[in-house]
Image (cartoon, rainbow, N blue to C red; front, side, top):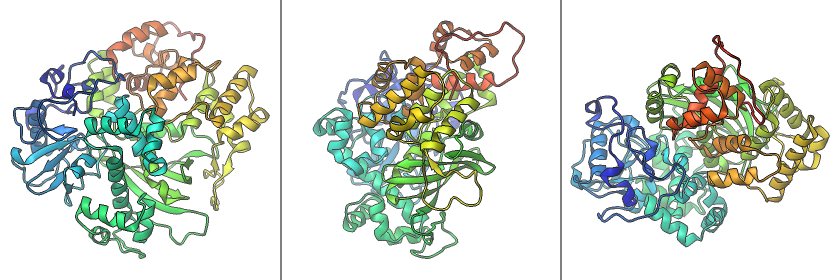
Length: 595
């Protein structure tokens, strides 16, 4: 862990809050990652959000990416030890507890007896714990928790690499491919990741493969051999060795502990594997994806459903459905709310053309639903502004919807500028009906069931002019963007840096800051973007008594940093409420509406 994380100057309380005694003397949430500004409980360092902090090694000895073992004089170790002792589930995913006397690592809320400080080290990733010779706790399953929010909040090399590793880039392209995407040599990338998170890209990818394999073993009745290759392992032997090292069980024993019988139908299975489905229709699997409380799930699914493209998406009584492309094939998806208010979750049922896409699917759905957001810190920071306090209290845990397909998100933004939601849906539906590809298999008797894949950039570049309607300048822009995407001259993925992505987009003719900012917010999960040129957002600001001009709102919104994207969601929500008496809000050139 960099020295910048360890000094007490980075962890001084900035605001007051709930009594720390309720959480074992710990202020919640704990600061994690390389930037202290992500938490409402910490002071703001001099570097701006999104900037990469310089790497530095701590003068204290201890595991890379973690706190020094048993060093109660280290303020980071002491606070994390108190957090672990409180067994509060809200700390899960913020760090990992390594217990060297037993050789295991746990989530902070593990109900086991609290270990002595001298036997404990804290890690930021499971891979770092693996490298320290520890195995996952069988009781608390420390990998079955929401992920770290740090990788969306940060925009440095380590965070960008972590986002790509979670999306399965190492499995598809290897470490050289990952390094090439990020613009560095494999050696430098490995050095940065070891210094930042305690493990190199191969170890981090191995940990992700083990977690994917555990999910398949405990929630499907797939044959073990199929699971090995679906999870990304190169051989069954490598798969067996990794599962034994991480979970201290054979794959068969891990599955038996979950009550799943290979090749059978066990009532205790937590997924419905459609192994008997007709050829070409894929494999059906259901997963439960945990979120951090509070979680505005209804608002999130409502946002997605209101913008659903006919044939590609729909909002159903049971949740949100859509089709999507993944690295190895197609998929259909159904998302519904699950869990409780204290432990919310998304129930995800998918039909996959290739099971090798399971890990990328889970990563992308988590990003789409913003499940790893530190909702406690965000809400606490925004309630500090009286103008937003009422909205935050009435809608706690609001989320910024992410993106399943970056190219689709860009086309949505281009077609959605300066038109209504209904008009944008019509244009996108017409484009999908004409250029989209049908999903294999029978969609069923309901004609509204999503059955089309959103058109590729190549299809839009070749045939878009035959389908698109509207101003010629806008059509020209969409075709130019499609051609750039198809040729590889423009790349959109979660490994991009926010400033670089926005600069490349605005360098294209007729693409302005609103489009670039909206794409960065949705694709990268950037938490600190306020689209002040958006007319609906300014209308919402006016309803809350805030400045209604772009310049004045941008100046006022600086107090919401680094959570301006979430503040913007509250302003858009306010735009849907009845307008109080007052002067009308006039649009400005270049303003757009939320898509």
